[in-house]
Image 1 (tube, rainbow, N blue to C red):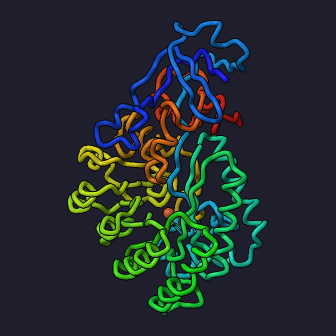
Image 2: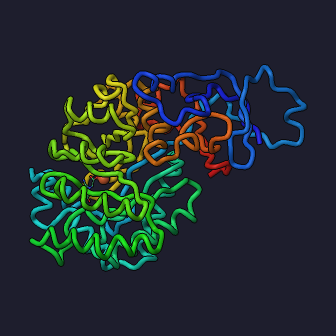
Image 3: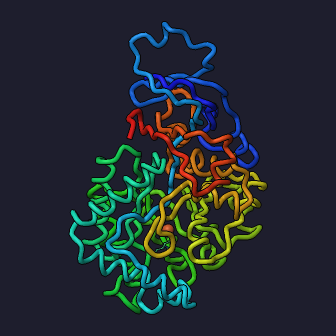
Length: 412
Ligand code: NIG
Ligand code: FE
C-alpha cells in the first residue's frame, strides 16, 4: 500500500537511532517534502519523493491520497494508568477549593479512592472502560502505550488489572507494554503498616505476577509520603530476580532520591521529575535511563513543570507522556502533551515531537521499532489535514489536526 501526495514527512531518523539525545531531538525537523511512503506487512517498506514515483511502482497497489497533509509517526505514550473504575471529579472540586494532591491522599482519597472502586469492579467492566479510553487515545494518534496496574493494591486486584492490560494488548492495534505498580500506595488492609505491605508485595504479589508472565516492568511511587528509597530498592531488586526492569515514579513531590535510585538499578525510565536539579541531571547523564516528564499532571495539579529545557540542553533523551489517570491527569491526548512541551517547557516543536514519539518509544524499549519514520519500523503514523507547518500543531493546540491514523499498517 502506498500513501501518496504527502506534503511533508517528519521525524525521518536513521534505522539504528533508538533515541534522540539533547540537541539531536531537533532532527524531528528533518523531513521530506512532497513524498510517498510504502507500507508492507505492517511496516514502513520505503519512502521517497513524488517526483521519483512511477506508474510501475503503483501497479496493483492500494493507494491512499494524503492530499498534501503532513505525515508524522504515531505518538508513543510511555506512562499511563488507564485501567480504573469511575472518575474522580469530586477531588477535582476539592482541588479547586484549595486542597493539595497530598492532602487529598492523606484523607483517604486519591489512589485509595480508585483502589476501592477497582476492588469492586469486575475484570470485564475494567476491560470495557479501559478499552474505550485506549481507543480514544488511538484515534488521537497514539500508536504505542504503556499501561500500569496500581489501583489494585492487593494481590487479587493487581492481578485483575494486569490481566485486563494483557487482554488490551491483544485487542488494540497500538503496541502495549505492561507495568506492575503494586507499590503505588499502601493498600487499605495495611494502613499504618507500610513495611509489612512491602514485605507482602515482595513475598506474594511479585511471584504471582511473574508466574502469569503479566508484566514487562515494575514501578514504585518513590516519593515523599509514598515509598522510600530503601523500600523502592528492595522492590526493584526483588523484581529483577523475575526479569522485570524498573520504570519508576520519582521526584514528583520532592527531591526524593528517586532518580538516583532508578539510575542505580538501570531503570528503563524515571518518570515525573517535577522536582529535579543539577544532581539528578548529572546522574541521568551517566546512565541509559530515559527521563520521562508528564506535563499533563503539572497542568492539572498546578505543579511546577519538569525542567525539560535544562535536561535537553544537558544532552538527555527526554520523553514526554500523558500520565493518563483519574487523579492527576485525566487526559490521554498526546497532542496536548506536545503543546505543553512547547508552551510550558520551552521545547521546540521538533524537540517536543521527538519527546512524544521516538524517545517515548525508547522509554518502552521500542526504540528502533516504533516512534519514527525509517525502513522496517512500525507503519504507525498520523496524516494531518491542511496544516501549514509542524509548529502549527502545538500552536493551534485545540484545532483538530488529524485526518487519518494508520497503526501497524491498519487504518483506524
Ligand atoms: O502518576 N503520582 C502517582 N501516581 C499517579 C496519580 C495517581 C492518582 O492520583 O490516581 C501519577 O500522577
Ligand atoms: Fe503516573
